[in-house]
Amino acid sequence: MITFEEAKKIVMGTVVRTGIKSVSLAESLNRILAEDIESDMDMPPFDKSAMDGYACRREDFCKELTVIEEIPAGYCPKKDISASQCSKIMTGAVVPEGADCVIMVEYTEEIEGGKIRFTAKETRNNICYKAEDIKSGDIVLEKGVLIKPEHIAVLATLGCAEVLVADKPRVGIIATGSELVEPSEKAEGAKIRNSNGWQLAAQAQNMGCEVRNYGIAVDTEEAIDGAIKRGIAENDILILSGGVSMGDYDLVPGILKENGVEILFNKVAVQPGNPSTFGVIEDTRCFGLPGNPVSTFLQFEMLIKPFLYQMMGHNFDHTTIKAELSEEIKRKKAVRASIIPVKFVSSGKILKVDYHGSAHISAMCNADGAIVIPIGETVIKKGTMLDVRLL
Image (cartoon, rainbow, N blue to C red; front, side, top):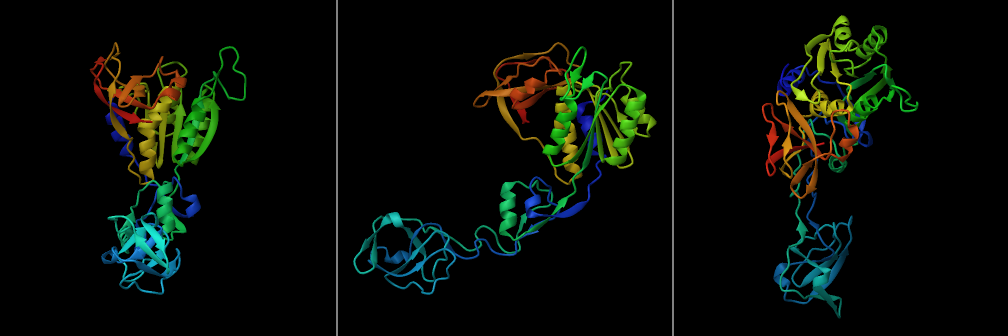
């Protein structure tokens, strides 16, 4: 049995990068950028007004100013500003030559003869200066960025109608277990509904993967072997839930081996998720996760998600914040690290979610994040400052 940190190191050491492709700007959201983006222009491209007001010379504040022109956004000024002159200007418009300040409308009053007067004692320049945000030739977005809406705005600003991104990893999902039925069916007798397959598919889809959900493989060698063969042939990553422990019907590790998968580990000193299996066959990576849904959820978030992002060239790490524990946490055994779901109860304070074990998936709906209790520790005292990994 290896530590979670060792397991993650092994998994990350087998990364095979996906290819790259060009997609439209509209298709690039939540994809991983596969090239550095260099600006082809200065931003702003000219000195522009930050306010609706009057462009003038600061040295003329004490004078009555004659309005010589109106400058809306998108219009190039025709007249330069000289002594005792100003131009009425709109937000985003080009500041005319000669002006070094824009007076806000609220700080002026109109007077007879097409003139205005400054009514305040002082003001900022209210000018956004050429190239103060971006200079032509600057690297604005770096390869490996996860493209979010704010990045879309930058790409659009720089005229990137087509964007080079990493290909989506192909992820196959198999839920094993003769006790399972699909959500559309009634769970009668000893049956339960398949939540793992749908959960794992959603987690992979949520990070932009191409997902194939193969549904349920019953606990027979024939069914699991057929599902594994297809999953390996059609995917970069194969994730199975259930069938990885020590019971008579836990057939997954053996069948993976029979299909040529080299098993790199099959036990991790972590709770939940102890009987997790990982193996490789050529360019396909195979994960065997426990059947309890909290185990599959957390192992995907903590182990598989960083791996999939790394395949696409993105260095993912959970957002982690410090928070104070509101109530003491105890556990009986400390031979494994424990991943505990927590929620924020006030500013900077956390509480363990009411959590009955790795089958209690509804508890995760109340969790904001997770803490990790290290091997060897049985008590975390109230008031302890902890790292919370946001989920």
